[in-house]
Length: 209
Image (cartoon, rainbow, N blue to C red; front, side):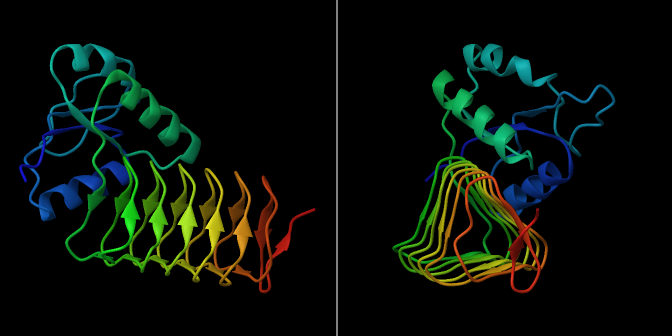
């Protein structure tokens, strides 16, 4: 299947990581990058096409596929949904070293970074990041706009709501539910359900007052 030339939204650190993934996965050079930073240098070797607001004009000019390479969950989801509404295709991106089970699914605009794992029947939500070395075990499901940071592990059957951030090297016990907008701190060990909007940290993880 022919891989599309993507319009990239975001020229920061995650944008550079996505650019490397595209090269490793054999995508053609991106069409260009949009970024709101007034002093943004753009991405190496990629045309800088202006601010994020140009995505509608570029669609009208023929741009057909895009990826939101921004780390902030709510912003990434919002822009991804806006791109879909404009008629852009948002293919799921997968590094060649990622392990994705045949029964696993990667949502629109999601990305599985190097050495990440999505196990049997796992579902990574739209506009979500399964970052370097992170594991989404069998039957685990994330809502849209989540970020599972490097080295984090979600046990079998874990359920994340929308826009959840799971910090670096955090672990979540199998069968646990995490509500919308929750934050799991770096290195936390989550052994019970987490309410929406909560921030938990520590071993075992507890909600901050």
